[in-house]
Image 1 (cartoon, one colour):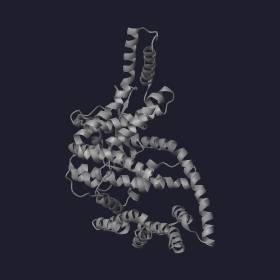
Image 2 (image 1 turned 90 degrees about the vertical axis):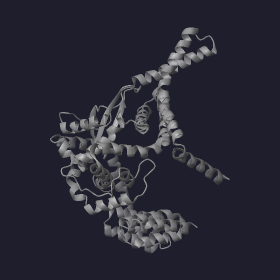
Image 3 (image 1 turned 45 degrees about the vertical axis):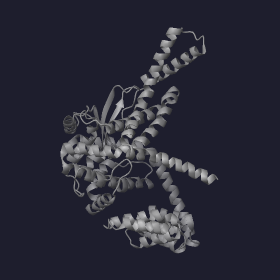
Image 4 (image 1 turned 90 degrees about the horizontal axis):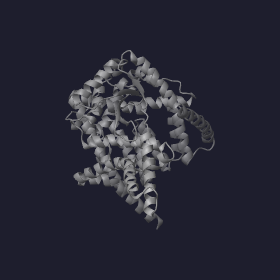
Length: 507
């Protein structure tokens, strides 16, 4: 009985999560109208407080200020509620986004590039440019007060984007953002995208407060933002295509396609290679004393191998469909009628050197210092965790040498050796636990995952064996085999194999 109720609740939850996408596909006009109405609900909540003051004030002026009836008490309560909300919104001052401000005198070429793109797309005025630590370019609208009548437009450019892209590629990314506020090309998706950012700022600002601010504004936007993001997510793939068209109007097919490719390849390099290696230093260093952005500019030509970049690009191209909120690289390139993706190589010089000129060195110091201050607490926790895991590894190593390890302890031992030991030690650890636990599906699957990650064909046999032993590993094993085939260049072989295998194993 309890299981059936739980399954029913899960079914209802899944249906609710799929509703926006289904409605967007089956009834696009109704969906867009509903999305626009939901977007206006945020404004309606903000206007409701001064409107309460006006209505309650007029009623009290007409009926007398003293509450002589229950309606009079209600008018006083509504007036107090409206005044509280209006004062909270009127006194609110939103913080500017994080990042290092770059003035016109510091980087005239960067400002000139942004202004030329803005003029070409007839976009909104950019009030300031800030350099952040993310591999991203975003245009953020920040309200001056709680009533979003006057906005400040801040262009956030990540230092990694400046270091990893050419001037033309960075220009394409900037154009994709500035085009969203173009007076000629403003669409529903652009408006929705800007409101998604705006309402998140309201949630973060007022939820961090206390008293009436949190009660009247914060709680509403906490729930409203989640609903709004969930309901409008089907609009985001089309909005990304619209951003790509803004870049295409500014630069042309070749530069726009190269920007998309570099965005995919460099994003993966930073996420899977560079930043993990930076955080790995916390295993031994208790304080974040390194300069990751200065090091990135020096190490990038040495660390990013062309063959590895092409493999990542091949895998991104083989991914035939994107997520609910973001189209994949292949879909984006096909939407602008570009050919198959080609890795253009690292830029020479990068946009950072071409656009920042003499200000580059000083900005590197400021961005590195901001990163160190921001990471210090998390870095220290990571170092403490590393010390504890090393002690745990030594204890497991002692047990493995005597009686051997089984089950969860065996997998924990192999994972810790992989993290803190050499490649050969990790390989020996997986061989050891596999020999000791040949009938444990979890260990067989873990070993197969490890060996396919190394590019060894024997990992596929272990994954197949894990699927035979436990049906729960069918889908994840098929995905791992698919990734392995893609890395080896066999892109078209696996999808049919995946469907056949899943149907055969599950049936």
